[in-house]
Image (cartoon, rainbow, N blue to C red):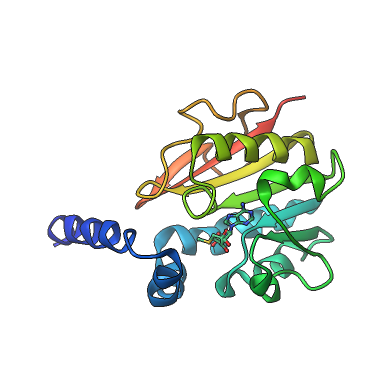
Length: 199
Ligand SMILES: C[S@@+](CC[C@H](N)C(=O)[O-])C[C@H]1O[C@@H](n2cnc3c(N)ncnc32)[C@H](O)[C@@H]1O
């Protein structure tokens, strides 16, 4: 059954990807976001793992379904800032710790060496789409991260090429490790990868 439905699901997703971005989000965004295996894994495993470690964190890209994440990450004395390009999505950010702006210019929005962790999930391919833009984002994130800090990167394989395999990050990042998490793994059509800012 799974083998029969998978090609149709992939074709469906690729067709939807051709629609204007706003229409995609309106029609399917919330439904997909809440039910996909990668999302369930993110909420049940990844976020609690990082919450346990605390520290200063930045969550990039705020949607209705991410509105609880910053508080979840702050459970053990962590501090979580949120960053989102669209002003009307600021309401899904962390109240009092939200910045409206472009991730590729994050170094103009936050102090240097500020963050222990940056979460950049679902932003490459959903706004920052070109290799040049993704490289700029890596550079800007590296500036605002402490040496040795962790970048949790996530992307959909049907929206973006693998930015690490394209060698867009290696100037500033190397493979990272977080206890309890594989360094790089794929769930359905979503890849998570942990990177470490070079010292
Ligand atoms: C598909 S959503 C993913 C949201 C969230 N990060 C998640 O994991 O579900 C992509 C979000 O990234 C935001 N975004 C796109 N380009 C951006 C940029 N250059 N800077 C900051 N946010 C951006 C979009 O406005 C949108 O809210």
